[in-house]
Image (cartoon, rainbow, N blue to C red; front, side):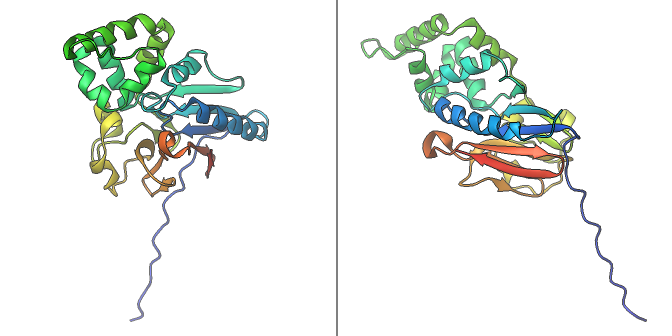
Length: 251
């Protein structure tokens, strides 16, 4: 009896709905200079889009900390979307920790360790070395609360945990494998790492994420990582999604 060879059916190519173009931007971390350079590239790219294309910029979180201009990044968001674009800002673990510090100075050790001191300095706040430790933190907390504009607080409070577009799910960190997408814990979307990165599971959508630094965009069957360590490397990356196409822009 002859042996019959069966060719496995290829997986369906992930797509974005017709007429949409998504610019997903990785972790900025206070590098407003790189953000501005990349947005100039995005605007030039968008100018070549077919007429009627709806273009949306999606910032994948971690806009603040580590780099020198976190205040400037929140100001850019507070100003609204660039002309001709939609704009969605996702919450990263650094925005989560900054907001917790604003509500409770007890979050200081974690936030300062993550690069929160750079964010304080971007608002003109420095720790006073003349004060003892607890008083120093309390004073910095009060000073930041006084310095940060209400519009920046509104940006922080209004950030989304995720965005679903066609066959893609855009989040900051990733998803918990085996958990339905509509039942994910928001903390996992901001903080998960190894359990997600090491998983080959089909999550139901291709997950576009930042949070974990890679030397170059990491494209796998179930996820695409685009945090190229802008604050340290000078490389800020955008993933462009349109129809079945994927491509990258980078500073």
